[in-house]
Image 1 (cartoon, helix red, strand yellow):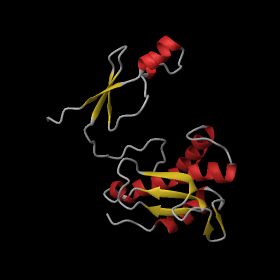
Image 2 (cartoon, rainbow, N blue to C red):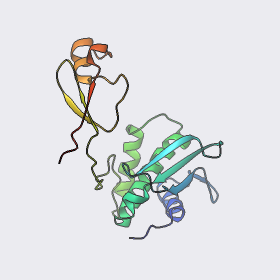
Image 3 (cartoon, rainbow, N blue to C red):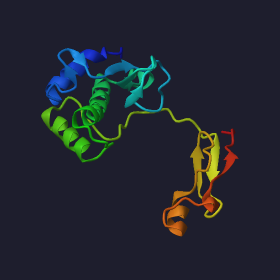
Image 4 (tube, rainbow, N blue to C red):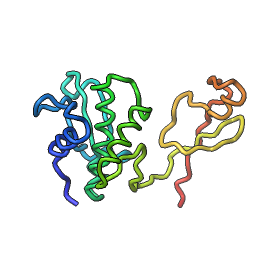
Length: 182
């Protein structure tokens, strides 16, 4: 399915579900765009910080590779999800991910319409890539798949069980290359 322009959807959702709070007149408080094709593991994200041009700003980026193959309701659900994050950050000015404000706004949007459902976690088909590494806990032997080695990453279960939840060097993963055989 061809990609839809995001700005008209943004303005419609802003009017219908956010009382126009994410724009001043016709000017959005953040940029909304499709990814350049590299965003392949997540349907979208909201971020605040430095933009490519070096200025401060906020943006919502939706995954072109994942969403272009799905029905438009997937794009609508993802955009609305990310707009909730923007609303919490820019309007409520609260540091929260998927907390009570998110859940309350998500429930209100879902109750107000039945074209799509906003959820905390999308269930879109994301192509799985085999792990490049196995992270092995030297204490309990737990094996976890990783795409890259993470310096000083430790086994959460062993740190919780033996060190009261604090990181400890005896729980640091040892990495083994994953087999390339099928």
